[in-house]
Image (cartoon, rainbow, N blue to C red):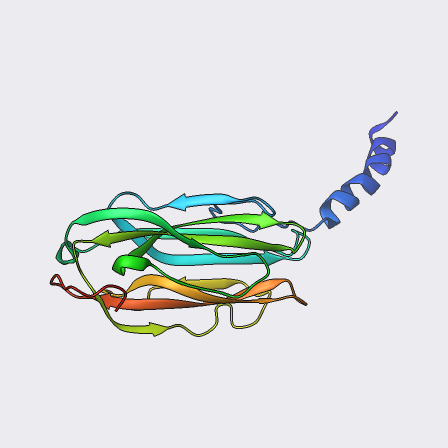
Length: 192
């Protein structure tokens, strides 16, 4: 068989392969679609950025990416870390780290029955510092099924938790992250 005939036979295959959409955009994703993950910052670091990419073809699921940064020395010593409360797939969820903790990790499990995930935050406490000047971000993503990104907007703010809503029609979530400053002295309040 000459090369021209071989090319004509292979051309339909090449067109089919090139027409298939790539569902994995570039990035250092911690998961594949429909798979669980467990991400933890290194000791002494907390989350400072969260990015996700939605795909209907990927099971109405998202790829996730997280970035960490060391905490400032004024925050005090890391005294303990724990996995806080867990969400239920398909339901709204609000979680703020107990014991004045800061979010230092995330784990999630995908449930194909509801095309959604369960979530849990890994929280760490620094000395006996307390949160203040807390606020919630706007919805991230702004509209369901869009790419989503949170980068801490100002030095000295930390992620303490999140509130999330789930659309049963669009099979996606929007997040409002809870951001706080932390005192530079020990205090006696918990979850202030």
